[in-house]
Length: 245
Image (cartoon, rainbow, N blue to C red; front, side):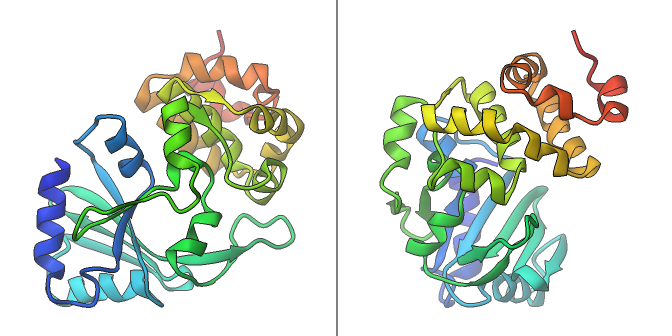
């Protein structure tokens, strides 16, 4: 769906509500808009109010708008299908990771705090759906986009220790966008490669399927070998669908 079509559609559904000015596009769509893309299959929305993701999802559900809806009460998030596209609705929040668990404890927080839970600076741009105002709260995202650089917002060892899936995401973005890894981020990936052993087979399968869809498996496989990730891919997943070269 073209970005103009999506924004017009969503604004028509939220006009006059508390969500109209508190809803922000975030993540890959905002990043890719700056890179010249304008057609997308899924959108991530961050609602800047307590329980915002849930409240917006239920508001739309009560109006009979989504074709389907999944609600995740624990994280105040929801996923809806809208005219054939996927839309994830989340509440702006902070996250606290404990005991190496992938799923954190959360609490509501404004955008200026929400930004610090995100993985990479280029994925930490926000665009308001009502007036298209662009925010770069960490003040690094636009610079790193221009420099074609993958960099964590916070100390990279901590970021990867919190969630080792971010290691795989960093390499996927480097390959798909043809960006370089920041020096500290690259060094941290080398040091934390073994953390990927913690990932479930489902997490591996989900990530590898994205590589297959984007047709960048060969490029990422080289990065997996370079940074010591290749040895940790579950064999029963890779042998059939992702053969080594």
